[in-house]
Length: 235
Image (cartoon, rainbow, N blue to C red):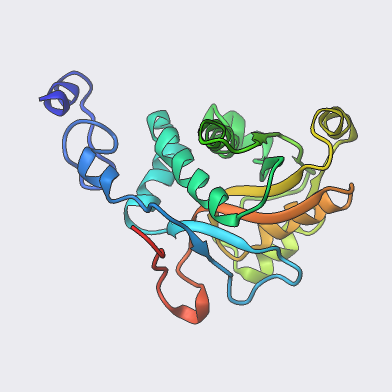
């Protein structure tokens, strides 16, 4: 009845199964991954710290990510943040932990009207603190001018586009280090593809002395583990 009323008033549908009602119906929500696994890109960028993802970038997860990023379906931020929290917990990194989202281009944030990657990191931190983790989210990274949209670029082009593209300003870093000394960093993103974005974020943070321990993502593209499909270890 609740879904029917929602559909009548707002015209909403589940992004996964298209059932009228909430943006993610109870049935599709129940099928979301409950655990995460290592999701190494093949090939992996040299030096990349262990990357973890809650599921494969396909089906429901793909629809959710695109719904939030491209269609501004903000209600999807909460379940996506929950999936990111699952991936962060799976890293096993002891606290205190900083969740540092990969930075979006300012033009993309302006066009979308929100910053989805930071929203997911912040939401994941809130959820994990409720579960007893010593964790917080922090915007530490910025993009340098000249970075272009990654969509449609192959692995080599992505790496070239991202090389030296991120920086960690000293002001926010200094203030954070005073509040959370000796924190370990988990780089956060919505989708792990070639690993080039995560590796560049890792480089920029390590260049200013941060200890980057892992990468966590909501989903990983299919091209991992030498072509075997992504199968979460649990639910």
